[in-house]
Amino acid sequence: MTSSATERPLIAIVATGGTIAMKNDPVTGAPVPALSGADLVGAVPKLADVARIEVTEFSNVPSDYMGPDLWPGLSRKVDELLARPDIAGAVVLHGTDTLDQTAYFLDLTLRSAKPVVMVGAQRNASDADADGSRNLLNAVRQILSPDATDMGVTVTLNHHINAAREVRKTHTSNVETFNSGDAGTLGYVDEDRVVFSRKSLRRQTLPIPERMPRIDLVAMYAGTDGAQVRQSADGGAEAIVVEAYGFGNVNAAMHDAIQYAIAKGVPVVVATKVYNGRALPVYGFKGGGNTLLKAGAVFADDLTPDKARVLALLAVAQTKDRAALQAYYDR
Image 1 (cartoon, rainbow, N blue to C red):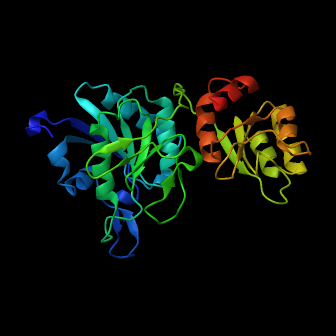
Image 2 (cartoon, rainbow, N blue to C red):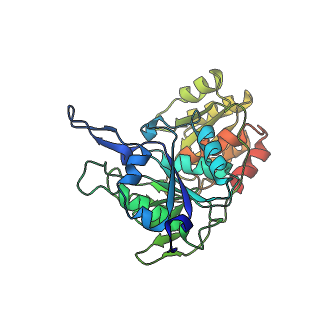
């Protein structure tokens, strides 16, 4: 800890909303947006012991409202703050429903090596055991760690540090909701210090396009006739992500619909809905991954369908060539 307040590092906190910024409405009794970033910082007096804080109020919306219309502006704002030499890093306050998607978009587009920590809460600020304050303090402590630089954007809740590419939400209400599956966490914010165990090796940076393309996400389900893929291809989608089974398998009708979309010049990315493992072109039955590969589909590796779409938003703006798109997913 530094000797005086003026010598303490300056941390940017960017508020976007989410459960961390909600309280129970006195009329309905249900949580609604209520707190600003400044309010949240004011509720954690220990922050003043370790850092100086500068709050930017970007938005105050449920994270279900976050998406391609807001992500570019958020990325540019965080980059603008990190470009200042006096700012050591940034904490982004965000709802948990789309936290992993926003984190991945930022990880793909931010240019600074300074630490960026995404923080949310599973319990709103009216709850007696609300988790937002501890998560916020831990995020600032993580940024101040000497090992925090060049780790990429992280999602840090309940003390666990997860890489943006690998993390996903796994429980609707438990505070231990975010983990990284087979990849494992990057580290842990402990009581005495921040311990990093590894660094994410699968990172890349893409430019933010002038116009975000329309990327549709369509789920494979038992008995589907593939109509939703055809409608997307005919309705203006610039690429389609298919949430497939297993290694990346669909039924015969979905196979034909995917083939139809690709023939129309609409790239199709195949991701798996399975929690762990990679989408791979293994099976040779009609609709098996191998037949989808031969039809010209791209495979999303171990990205969740949501994150496969996030990457497509940036990659499809660069190219629609199948091999070039596949290279983005293989990195």
